[in-house]
Length: 411
Image 1 (cartoon, one colour):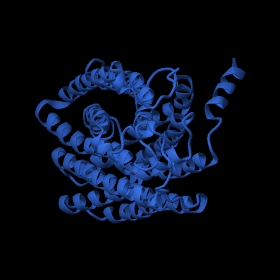
Image 2 (cartoon, rainbow, N blue to C red):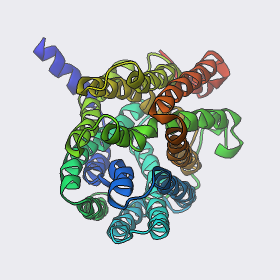
Image 3 (cartoon, rainbow, N blue to C red):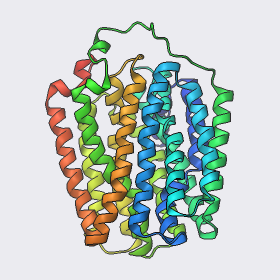
């Protein structure tokens, strides 16, 4: 039994390129310092004494900066390549973390947050293009899962340590986040050689079915559904920590451990899960069930008592939904792109999540203000259910299946 388990893990991690592992190491170091975002709402309300609505708008400005950064990052990626953009984004983002630690008014923090997010999020399209470049059709979903493993393992460290640091001084969060960003950028510069886009790369007829992400109607529908889902998922990092602190009265250290639990579950199980599922069904099938489970995880708060084990159960359900949905979302968008427009597709996918970062804290704060957290959690459950139905309809319409579109064997 033990040997079979070890063998399963070996198969799940085998066949990936050295460059993919380097990207994973850089991502892990970067995300190990991810402490500001999950505690930003608490920082604004508890430390700076902003209202919940003001804190929501600060988080919305983070999302607005993300959209600008993703759009710019996608354009630069397609024009000059992904290497130096990743390095530049990490270095400038790291510097901005130090800057905003000194900003304490609503106006200055809002402006600083926008600029920080714009720098940080320009990294994402470039990084997505890099993962695709260093992977093959056969291991692409696992390559993205490996990248997500680094994100979540780093998130686990960052969340746990961040909760401890926040209980001492919130400013430590900004300092650590800035240092890890800068170190990750320098490490990437050292480990991986520059790669420039080759505009004369031959592209197969199958890959030329769609030339522009912004004219791909199927992809635009996918993006719309992704925005709805992501706006629910981001409550995990914006309003849920405030809920745990102000309604269920958990302390910062326990909240940090809960955030770490989400990452640890993904680190331990996602690669094996993806290895078992990859290629068995079209991506939209797994996305459908994953989105539904995330909604169920939020609705649990209204159905069970306010105790620690319920918070843990909710995190487990949401984590399972995340593992089923997000890796296959990457598979879906990458299957519709080619080497010449991959930055554009990656940018639009990143913009979807960035738009959700604007919507999530704003409508979350307004709902809490007028109907309390109960209204928010019911709305999350309903929205995810409706969105999962949308993905299911796409799955049932074979024309929306990228496995068919690009003649990849779905079995």
